[in-house]
Image (cartoon, rainbow, N blue to C red):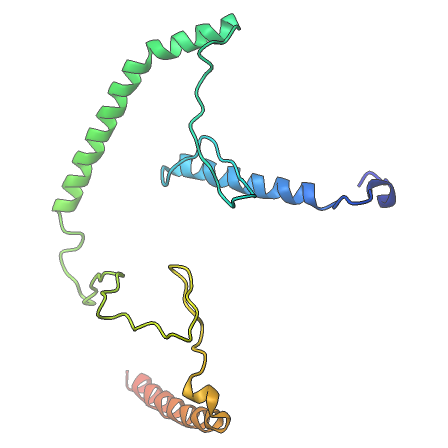
Length: 186
């Protein structure tokens, strides 16, 4: 945009894309934190760092310097401390009002009638529903799953894959014609 020759910007051993990429990542984190604050969800981070050596994101609360030599800084800290009790009372009143509103909301049913018989079920998996881990299958992090099983019978029998897919197409065509006839009857 400034009509500068790009060759003059490049330096040996420096990646030209690293600064804009880093700025983009940091901006994304700032926007996410701002949305959490504005929409009042999640935990808003006052400070977020990153330690690449240990792949860790430390968080901490930043506090004012108690031994600051700037008189305006000391004056603002005293003003903040003076209003701290009022802010705490306001926070407690807000929390009490929210708890009362939540209790009233929970007491009343959401809908009087359930025309479509919609039910809410837990997403938690009981230990009886989990399959035993295969010894040949490598473990994955919690919350992740493999897209397909290695060593399944269909993958081992190369010819069996084509036969199963032909049968699946026939069944799906029959199911489709049944669904179309049901639709026409409506």
